[in-house]
Image (cartoon, rainbow, N blue to C red; front, side, top):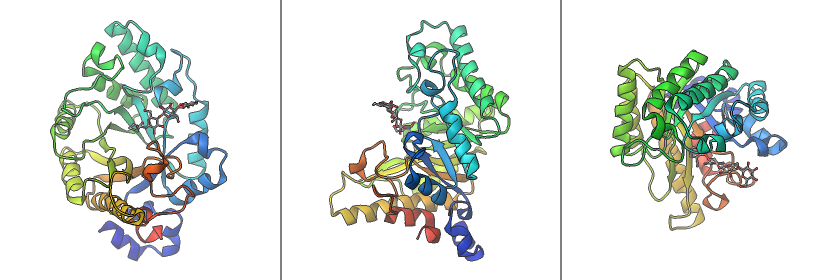
Length: 330
Ligand code: G3I
């Protein structure tokens, strides 16, 4: 509804460049900086089509703190400066995860006190460094397993600190950057099931205890063989909105390989998946941003054969882009 209204109210010329602000929520993309930095075509795609950028890998712990205490901000700073120069918002991804953390973290023999200090140091240093330049942080990424239990992965956070590491990280992030929105970002929690229930319980518990949490990220990595429709996403988003939280779709892509049919059929179905997510975000006021995970099929972490993104390998818009961006995506 918001998109339809705005489409009438805002002159087409104003929305043609970057459709996202006119949509009532921001439209973003994960940016692989190593591929965008020196590539005129990809830069044009970012600058023309998206209102928000998520660094795909540059803000992860293995990149920012490869050796303990030796922070390496150059690449992330360059990407964030590029975003600022072009008026793009930046989502920070991610402060604490069970993947892509440095070897020193994995191999250390940690006491709880030492690991807690390392956690607070990382979150504080990074959030303070980007204060005022990153508007939201995925403070904790993918804390749950599919059965709704807490996930350890190959990181020491959960085994050494227990689930309290989540609260510790959120409090440290708030102290370091009081203006950034703080998120927990989760994969495969769009559908009904134990993982979604556990995420709602976790969010409710944190909110009830006054732990700073502003939003939930739903990654929505999905597939034309079975994707959450508008009603499903609205239902899920409203469970978090009822707790006073924002919701974002943070990493959407839609694989097509597993669906039978012609290539054109698959792309039509893919467009429907993106359109359903856009309609849900449009409908739920708490939904503030929809980010696709990569720039083009050439860049997707799922491989080009999946054709998972709204721009093809030649960076041309696909039906999915028109479904996402509405009239401005034409
Ligand atoms: O940068 C090195 C390069 O120097 C080296 O030559 C090359 C050799 O393999 O690896 C490069 O690093 C890769 C990096 O992506 C950059 O391309 C890593 O091996 C690879 O593991 C890494 O994958 C990233 C993945 O997270 C790691 O788990 C993907 O790009 C990134 O899209 C993906 O994103 C995650 C989100 O953060 C969280 N949610 C799920 C999502 C998809 O897995």
